[in-house]
Length: 336
Image (tube, rainbow, N blue to C red; front, side, top):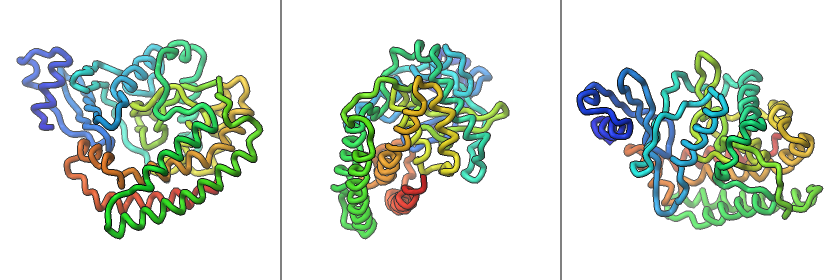
């Protein structure tokens, strides 16, 4: 999209007349790999305009999920997130306040930052916030039983078993998936043996989860950390939230913080010790899942999403980078 197109769309959504729209300014903002994001200055106010990827093979309504989630947090008085301004479902655009901050690097992550992230999750799961969020949907790929978690990873591995292409990098990826699948079968057997509850039992005490939660979706501001990107947010299993937080490859969180993170986040529960034990047991599920997610770039549909967000996207370079990251994540699987 060209800046003039962005300005026209944002002006229409905000009902800014042409005379004032002439002074608006827009430029690309490279904050993610799935959507088109621009910073926009309108009437002296700096905003972020986000066009969400939509495709027939992916029916998730990312705009609705994120905008509703942020409206709920605004009602709850949670301020360490962008404030929602306006949205237009037909145009597929959400408009939010601009958060002035910078990205964190992995070597900056310390106890203080981990505590801020954990406390943010705890705020989301206070009784008052739960009441406001009662009508929010489940998070993307929400699962509430061990069996459902297993099925989710099985489906991801099945998709990767059909990686197309005859180039060496694609053959290397298929070989890695074979190794990952063998390890996954062993992990499932171990989890079932160790579980002290029925793997088909559906957990009742769910959590409100940011989903895709981690320092890759955060900015350090003058007031502390602000958290971003809630297009997959909703009700979920707290074990999944914790496992995802420590498995995401973008900004790795050291295993030394695992137990402290669980102590803070799981205290929202009526049975925190059970929640912590469940998170420990299921961690390999999410570590395996993230190895699969990293390899999504080998799947044709995913390349469409990348090109939607960035027209300069280089498919071959990305595949090499992602296979290396998947192998690194796999090597870390036993560290917690």
